[in-house]
Length: 401
Ligand SMILES: *Cc1c(COP(=O)(O)O)cnc(C)c1O
Image (cartoon, rainbow, N blue to C red; front, side, top):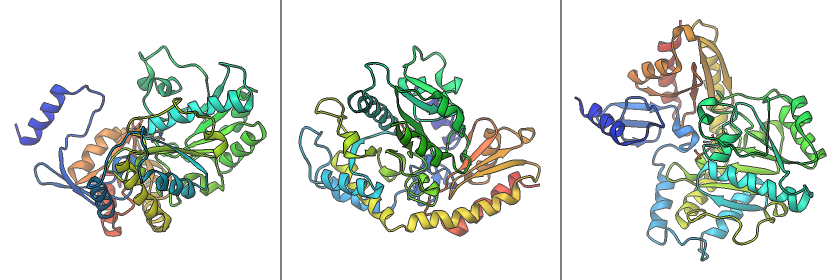
């Protein structure tokens, strides 16, 4: 067996099989590139599902982490620490909001958003006890906890994990009429991804998000935007909602907020909404820790310049122009997306998404399939244009003609 096969066998022997990774074993990474244990280099066109928006081992972020590691890394929220106030203030400002509730993973932030909306519903809106409902979209992906999978429509995600948490109504994504019908006086929130990532980078019909904004405002319902994957520069704006001129009541953030170094997530909203919590009602040992705050502060500073958003917009235009030429060429059925983010539907006759991913891997490009025959591309926003073109050449070699 090769070293690679040995390492994969060891992982398979001692880990729960919750993933089916491509047969590559990464040893080091830098920027948009990863190197495996055999010394082969790969262009990373997945970027940890947007967790690596600023690339692998971004120097500014590494330096911020290193400096903080020499001071203090963890206090728990039992005590104050000197990075916390600045983190909350600057993240709120980036979002154009007032108040931050920090957590670690995206799923925890979504759970936090659900708890917030429920408590807001009971204590502010006046919904009768135990009656609060949250409207969500079909084909959503919001994480893997018991409550979150309760409102998934993906059987793979859900089956055999019941009993499920009640209190959710699922409507088709992009269907305003269905959403209006699903709403009652007990609806406390609409929870949506402004672009559905896992579903295949699905952009909703133009006007949908503004209409949801209008409807939720009319009905006194919170509009919660899960921007864990779509936010922080990926689509060419700080938030995907901005493309439609929409400001939700609450942002759910994660992935890129941790700069690819550690998990950092947060719910960001108004003082009124997040003000429903009292000490002891919610929390996390690691949420808002000094190291997380130091890294996230640097992420926020980088986003404040707008350069990463501009880069995602510019390179994204290039990406979609090039991918557009592949669409309809036989092996590619459709291409969607926004900014430096694309879903490529491969003709199933040509192979599954995984088979295509494997072929790309053999040519030095790493991507991830989703839902059978879709490949999704989310390169680091720091990727060089020449590197992106190199990757596109490999995509053309596998999917063209
Ligand atoms: C990845 C993701 C999550 C979950 O984040 P984790 O950090 O994996 O728990 C939630 N919502 C969206 C839209 C995501 O893409």
